[in-house]
Image 1 (cartoon, each protein chain N blue to C red):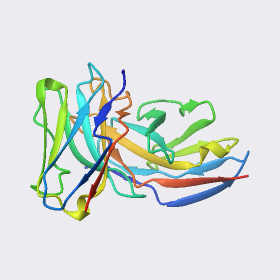
Image 2 (cartoon, rainbow over the protein chains, first blue to last red):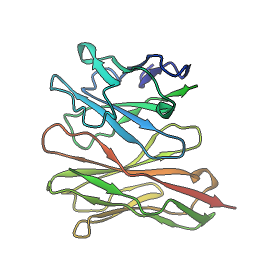
Image 3 (tube, each protein chain N blue to C red):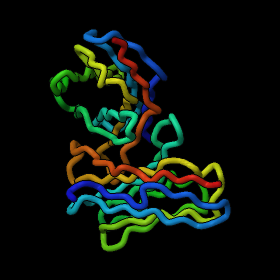
Image 4 (spheres, one colour):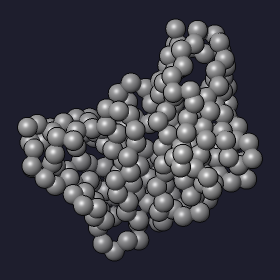
Length: 115
Length: 115
């Protein structure tokens, strides 16, 4: 499809396990964002990739969280040793960052539940 | 660092009436863009409208308009002729133009349209 694709759509994991969340951005989009949204809350910025620049990791809540973007396209968000407070919807978005006025397009999100 | 503030956690509006959702922002960068997104209960993020800091006129998109008051650093969303389908969370967001900076969101306002 032409939109941002995230997988899996739902993930249930046991506390202490590692999880990987995947994001396929829109082809040609140089900017990629990860956000976390807890139930009924706003979007918490996690990490931002722009082209070949070093990613902005300032939003990652702890060193258990990491992300990479391979070949300027697909991105994986990894959460190690998951905790119950990691339960949330993880949203990925991409945009043409070359132009400030272009909106970010969002995927449907991955709902993570840590039990 | 830029910051977005949405002070209304929840709003109610009668069907067919207009409603204003507040958004104030803080940045020292003279060049920036402001965005509004809608998130229905399905969870998808839908882009509504954009305003650039140098735009001379307030942005409009159908029933959506943006009341941009640069001196007050406010970018309120106005929805005219509210419909039941407008019930959703609404997020204000900002991106500054200097360097590689992420899109930052406010905490959102939940709008409920009453028949």
